[in-house]
Every structure is written in C-alpha cells, then in structure tokens.
Length: 142
Image (cartoon, rainbow, N blue to C red; front, side, top):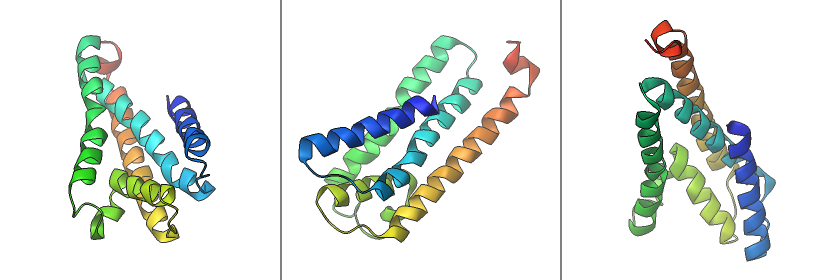
C-alpha cells in the first residue's frame, strides 16, 4: 500500500513538472514522502478497527475527505498560511508545495519538521495497527 502511495506521489510531482514547467526540488519529494506512509498506516489501522469490509470501506472513503477539507480550509482562510500551520503534518507539506510551485525559496527546517512529525504519526498508526493485529478476535474474525 505504501509503495503504491509513494509511486502516486512521484507521478504527481512529475505531472507538476510537465504541466507547470517547474521542477519541484528533490527535497520537497522527501518532505512529501511521509504523507504516503501516513496514508497507508492510517488505512491499515482503521481497517483493523472495523468488523466488516463494508464498514471499513465506509470509514476509509471518509478518510479521504480529511486532507481535502484541511486543504480547502487553508485555501479560504487567511490565517492558515501563518505561524504554526507550517509545522503541522499535512498543512506544512501543502504550504511547502504551494511555495515551491510559486517559485519561492524553501526553508529546510520547515520541510524537515512536518516530514518528521508525519513520519512519527505514521509510526504511531503502525504501532496501533500492530497492537490490534496481535489480538485473535481481529485476525480470526471473532
């Protein structure tokens, strides 16, 4: 799952480069890579919480709207691009991507912190999923 998500990320960055004739810096790809790991880890964790495939599908389809809603809020809210928003896991990466597409300078520290916090959240989601998968009722369907 994480490999497909990472491949999608690389294809999106390639699409940006081809359509907008601006090549995003490789450091931005490193900053965005933990997002694909977080998506895969959250999907795994949520799927272990559900009892049926239908329930898991419902929750996983709603999970897509969380970053979309955050992105919409950041576009329409004037305070979203200021201060501590640049340090949040998904918001920080979006702001870095916007800065790169506008041709602005990217701050390595502002790229490192959201990437690290996103990777930390992905690790926590994986630990939570691994804890759930150690239970017999989750694995065997009790």
